[in-house]
Image (tube, rainbow, N blue to C red):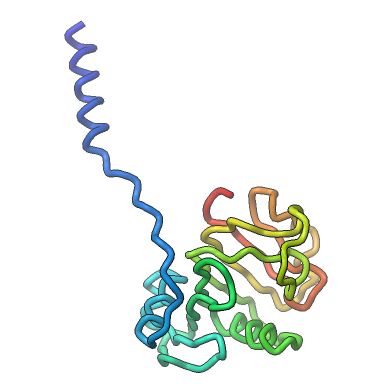
Length: 186
């Protein structure tokens, strides 16, 4: 009995000494000053990438020159939530094409981080601005990575169902098709 009581006491002490789960970062308001834009943009990716990245605004003006080939963009002011991005060169090409509504011309695999999550978006129409049906309208994505492949045929066979619990192809059958990889449960 003494052994069980001692084990119970140790369990209680260990449980009370365990670190608390870190709180989710609070969404920051839309950044206005250059320093705020930089801080917000840097939150999109791991510090090992964002600290030395270029920072651009959504008009694709350079706010800070970087040294590592990555570019981070702050929260988009025209969307709800906090959705900064960190992207490599193919994704920058993608974003320029997306903003200009032209076809991207990247020729290498692209990687992007959205560690603060994303705003609600259509899974099929890159330019939809209002909610579609629940099977198409993507909400509560949370932290995720995105991958571009230069040959969109490589995406065949990958699920397009954003509710499947794992990676899926967003915007299939468009020049903006890419792989979404959630890093937390949805």
